[in-house]
Length: 243
Image (cartoon, rainbow, N blue to C red; front, top):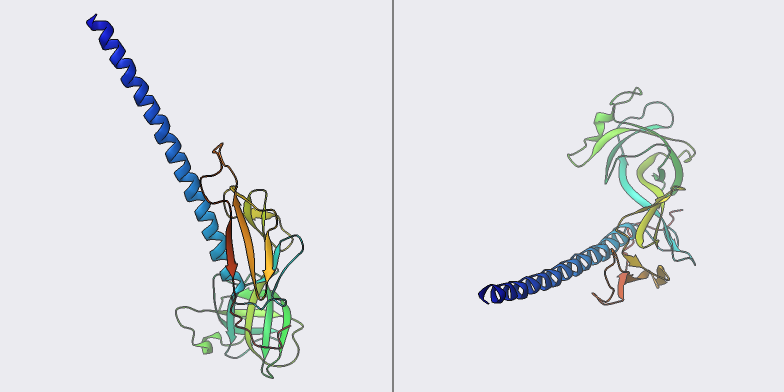
């Protein structure tokens, strides 16, 4: 009788422990899914706001009927300085999130006359005096990288400033927030836990993107509000006359 009572109590305790573990496992799973989704929302917000702030709507970025955000993704700015070397090669003090990439980046070039021109970046080198000039005249600080930049077809006006950019596109497709550089494929920036029927939409000078959570890893939906709006109102920093 004592053995029977002991086994019964042990079974009850074991069943309670299993039930508790299941409850904890579901709670942890939902918590992780909630965190992943909120992190995806933060990524969309921060990335979109950062990319649109240096540009002007309709000129540097636009949203297509397919909900895809296509833009000039600015990656840095350089001041032209020092003494030039060979024709088309200029010393530049560059600052930005990365160094220029020849063949992939394009340039907006501000001339001494105040006009802007566009050109393809053909070469970039940090080697000083590699083309017969003196790049040390730039007086670059710790935030700048001094180098030689080559481009063609930007007119005869002496350049003063350059802005480097790449062509890109942001979209919400196949469950994730994605970025495509140039004609390349769309690379995911978040896990595949976001669904959106419309993608980006223009609202005045800003835009809205509606994010709907999709179940991931077999987790049931409903662990978070089903609709979030990310609105970005960029502050244009470029003056008029930019192509």
